[in-house]
Length: 358
Ligand SMILES: *Cc1c(COP(=O)(O)O)cnc(C)c1O
Image 1: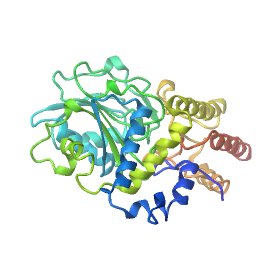
Image 2: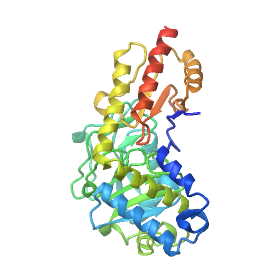
Image 3: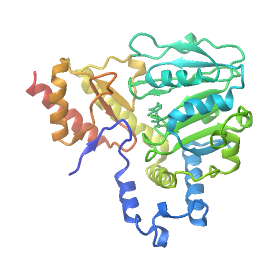
Image 4: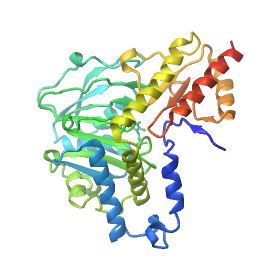
């Protein structure tokens, strides 16, 4: 059965990538073995790992003075690993609070250092603070923000510029969605399971001058300098996820890179927000300039219709549209692998549903 999977994460992967992985599942690279059955230190896997890094560097135009690390523990481990590495004892760090994930990052960072909230979006988190309202602590070790809040469907339309302070970004649900200027960031991290590949892998892109000042009690596997020195193979990395991420990077390159992908994502978002705004039935409460291109939240005129909407959508092959349990309503995640046809099918279904349940 062919479906469109709108899951927020783990999310759909490109069909072409899944087919390639299936084709070489049992006999990878002519070895007679699966890629997940071979040593991470063998020549063949090292080539896969290095190519994945090179392709990611090319896609994002990552400058030479940045390290790319392939780590484990998800974005949530990084909530702690970042202060362990970048905030020496006694340091203050600034965090922008725009919703669920930035709050989780704040709670974890408070275990290690003093956290100042540089701005909060307030109330129901349906917007992001304006650039000129961010409060910067002089001498802060870094400023952390969440460019795209996956649950609230709220996205920054600008990159904060904390003069002289490294900018740290949780790009779990927005990395590779469009080109970015990596040089504006001290550190970027992203769990793989939204826009990169299977869960189990988290990618960290960090400027070299930020390495080497981890707290003394930082576990070796979480010490960026040590991980970088061992090419992310201090211990066994999540080899299958790394390989899959590499296939996704090649798929992105084949399909025109991030400028083209960004344009595709813009058109998908425009289509669904246009349909929501044109109806007096569906509603999206996010401020116009803060609407996420990746995670589109919307509600029906009466929450008692939610169950019928989800059941009928599911039967029509439109999967995983239920909003996060803390928010309710609906959420359509439109990561890179969601084709325009999926959004067209969803919009047609929404119109039809409205007609049948006026
Ligand atoms: C999904 C997500 C996380 C959590 O990722 P885990 O890999 O489950 O730890 C953190 N931040 C953002 C923005 C996310 O979308």
